[in-house]
Amino acid sequence: MTNLTFRRPDDWHVHFRDGAVLQHVVPLTARQFARAIVMPNLAPPVTTAADAAAYRERILAALPPGVDFQPLMTCYLTDHTDASDLIAGFRDGIFTAAKLYPAHATTNSAHGVSSIDKIQAVLDAMAEFGMPLLVHGEITRREVDLFDREKYFIDEVLTPLLRRHPTLRVVMEHITTEDGAQVVASYPERMGATITPQHLLYNRNAMFEGGLRPHLYCLPVLKRRKHQLALRKAATSGLSNYFLGTDSAPHLRHLKEASCGCAGVFSAPVAIEAYLHVFAEENALDKFEAFASLNGPTFYKMAPNEERVTYTLTPGETVSNVKIDDAGELVSLFSGETPSWRALADALEPGK
Ligand code: DOR
Ligand code: ZN
Image (tube, rainbow, N blue to C red):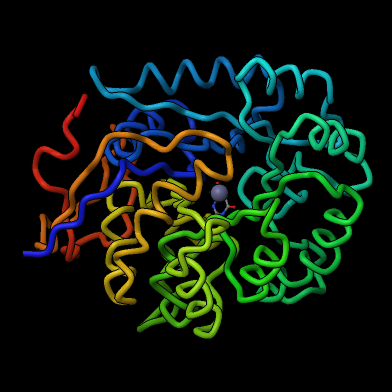
C-alpha cells in the first residue's frame, strides 16, 4: 500500500459564492485545506474592507462545528478602488491580497478594471505595503484568439506592469500555458503562480471528447497538450513559485449545460485526489508537499500548517454530485469516477 503523509495543504484560489451554494461548498474545501484564498467575484463584488469582513463571517458561519479553517479574503479591484480603504483592510488583516479582473474576462467581471492606467496609484500603494496583486491573466480584446489571451496579457499588460512597479508582488492565477510558467520563473523573487487540477489533468482535447463537455469548460480555457506538459513540469519542479490553487468554481448544472454555459470547474470535493493523481503519474510524489503545503505559505509570508494528513493509493468511493437544496446540483470533477487516491479515514476529521 502506498501512503503519502504531508502537511495539511492550503488552497490559494477558490470560489465559494454566497447563500445556499456557499453553505454546501465551504465544508468541502475546509475538509481538505487549512486555509484558502477566497475570490471576490460575487454579484455584487467584494470591493471594500467592510464587504470582505461581512463575507468572511458568512463563510465562518458555514463551517461544521470543530473544523479549523481560515478564509483569506481578497478585494475585487475596480477603476474606482479606494487605495486607503484597501491598504487599511490589508493592515488590519481583513484583506490578504487584491484581485485584478480585466473587465469582462470571466464570471462577474463586468465591474473589473477597464485599463491598468486607472489603478496605478492603487498598485503603488500595494507595492509600498507589500500587498500581493493576484491577476486573472487574460486580455479581453475581441480580435485576440481565445487560446492566445494569456500570452497577450503577459506581453501587453503584465510585463509593463512589472516594470512600472518594480517591487510589487504578483501572483498569476491559474496559469495555463508554457508562457505563463516561464514569466513566473523569470521573476522568482516576486512572482508566484497557482495551477489548477484540470489544467494538469487535461488539455483542450478533453473538452471535445466524444461531444461537448461543459463541465471541463473554464477560463482561462484548457490549452494544447504542450502547455499541459509545461504546467506538469512546473508544478512538479519543486520550485517555490508554483503552488496549489484549485479555482474550484461552482455553477449549478443547468447553468453549465446550457446554450451559453458558465465557465468553471467544480473540484472542491476531490481536489487533493486529483493533484495526487498527476504527481503520481509524473513520479513526483516527493515534490507534492512543496506544491500543496509549503510554496504558497512561503509566497504569502505565512507559516506552513503543522498538522499532517495521509492519503493512500487505494480507490475510494465513486464521486457524486452536490445537491443544492431545491436549486439544482453541482457536478464535481471526476463525477461518477473513482479516484485512485483517498484520504485515510481519520485524516480529515474535524479538529485532527
Ligand atoms: O472558469 C472560471 N470560473 N474562471 C474564472 O476566472 C472565474 C470562475 C468563476 O468564478 O466561475
Ligand atoms: Zn478563479
